Image (cartoon, rainbow, N blue to C red; front, side, top):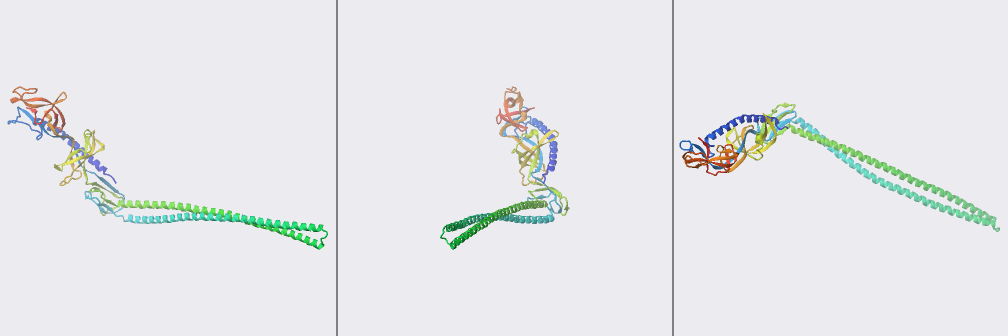
Length: 495
């Protein structure tokens, strides 16, 4: 979208030419008015000049009665009607033109200005939308997979903790069983040993006793042999029990170790599944974002097939024709019907202007109608022409209901610089300076042929030199701050 800069540059050049064309005639007109007013004694309606019946004035003098009123100084420039808003639409699309506002046509805000067949783009958008839906579905699956991986990891941790507890308990029980078995086997061996010692003592005592019969001695020897066998059996049983208990304990330790490594492997697998699910989720999220971006771009591109009016206005140029097939797009330039006055002010006058100053506007098309206006903006950028620097000033104005203002109308603008209300004033030609001070000649009565502080007039009329303090002037009349009162008669010229 552009801003109509080329059009504004053209208008600026036109404005410059108008200024140059008006400048010289304005100066000549000003000189003529000064000469005319100096001869006539003022501007008609701005004061009262006294003349006698012969038309030669009082005593051959042109005079002026001091009056009270308003006086102002204005800056006059030329300009033209401009638009507040410009817009250029460059549509880089292809298709058949279904609707197109023609050059010069007016429109209202919201009107359809250009419409190009977008069927192919709509089909493409439909496919992109389906791809977006698939991406959203994939994301939901990836999120579910990631959650399942987290849940599996949680279960694996709990199961590993339980398995480890069971393995530890089994090893501890095996150790306790080993200790109990060892104690029981030791007790059996000790008992068998004590029984053998007792049998041997009895046998030894029997051998020493002469009264012991061979039969008894044989019995005692048999008891020793039986005790020896029991001791040997107890020792063997102790060793067997010890071996079995140690084997059970070792198996418990091996099982505990196996459980540890199994748990570790299970946890690592769960962590790996989480990592894989997380990476998959990230990739799916990226794909979804890309799909969304593609969809938004496609929708934005779809907007290039239509142009709706952003405000009330006029089409100033159009590259579209209904029924035409375009392959490289086209442009449409519009302006708003919210008009404003654009004028170029020289650097010598621009310092006298600021936002909010009152202005009056008249159009060449409506020479008998005056429009009130206000300075709205002074643009900082400047242009230079023939060594003169100009600044663009925008002036808003009240458009009368019964007038049809059109874009580009020529205008004359008077911007109020200084204004004094309800003040005394006299014509400029009545004031003269001496040694930097301002004076007027006030008409007064005096003896015929004599004048006091002034020249003698006829029939006892003379001019009294009076010092005054001046203020604002409008190039015709000048404000009198002090030195005169309302009703005084001042001399404007002598014949």
